[in-house]
Image (cartoon, rainbow over all chains, first blue to last red; front, side, top):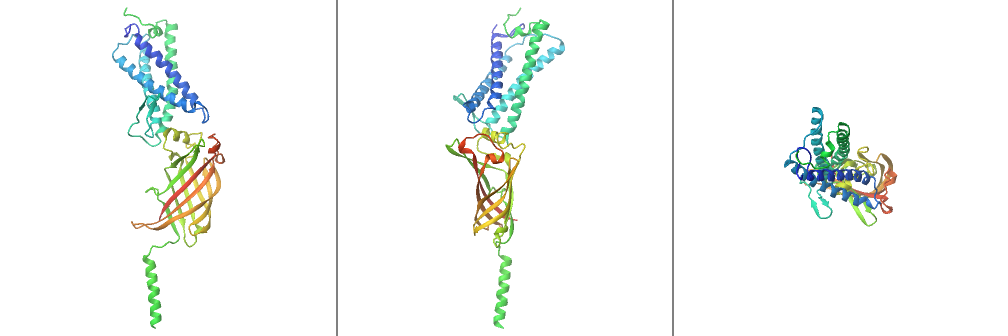
Amino acid sequence: MVKNSKSSYGSVAIAIHWIMALIVFFLFGLGLYMVELTYYDTWYKGSLDLHKSVGVTLMFAWICRVIWRGFNTSPYISGTALEKKAAHYMHLLLYCVMFALMTMGYLISTADGRGVEVFGFFEIPALPISIENQEDIAGDIHWGLAWCLILMVSLHALAAIKHQLLDKDGTLMKMIRPKVES
Amino acid sequence: MKKQLLTAATASAIALGSLFSVSAQAADYEIDTKGAHAFVQFKIQHLGYSWLLGRFNTFEGDFSYDEAAPEKSEIEIVIETASIDSNHAERDKHLKGADFLNVDEFPKAVFKSTGFEIKDDDNAIVTGTFMLHGVKKTINFPIEKIGEGKDPWGGYRAGFSGKTKLKLSDYGISYNLGPASTHVEIELHVEGIRK
């Protein structure tokens, strides 16, 4: 029940999934909020520091998740052949967009060679190369990908609910309660 | 006869001499941005606690200067606003954005002189139009000649420095940076190579 089975995800995958989901929503909201703050708002500087620190944490979680997935089987996918394909590619896309989003964020802050401080404990160093106006280009892409991700996540959630409530095929429960191989 | 000969000889010598000598005359100069012997620097207060300096890394310009008639001088500088560099990527991103310079909409800042008021051999007040953030205003500021002369590689150069203070809100930049930061000082240090 710790590892995935063919009938459901295991407790590790389930925990990472929901923790990362919470973090993604938190970062999106924080991102929207923090860019509206102005110079004399108390949270002007702190909100960005928090956004970056949590973003790096999310990247670590992403890496752990991908590695864990490599050591695990995946549960069956319900639905028509088209729905199975769509689910598979959407999940892949979610991984890719998350990775690109976090990388773009990193490239904004490190465009001048400065590292990213993580909760004041350690610093992720910048890459040895950067391009002209990197902070602007990476910034635009970061903004675009953030909205893409939220859109995709919404579709992902709606699909899970559709399958669970309309098709009644237990899709959502696979990511809520670990079930032993039946 | 001897006196005429001497006068003629002297005149020819002077004429020949002036052919070979590279002297300061009415001339057009291109600002040496290729060799980066020119700087457009800005200075603004941070919270009223310190000075924050930065540069516009990319700009170009030329000037014409005549030592015999300095009041006829002209200068034009075109600055790429997206080249702002305060040595901090996150700050530069903010400065280039809609809150401040809005470089997507206003990619260039331009100063074009309309007149020079000469104070002495090395000092003048230049008047001209400055366009920043889409707003054009007439400004004037003191300009000083630092020096001029031949360079070791066959060229002729002249250098000037100028300083002015601008009110941000005059140019439509109204973001609240605090009461000590309503104005920004611009320093111009240029060296031109005679064309």
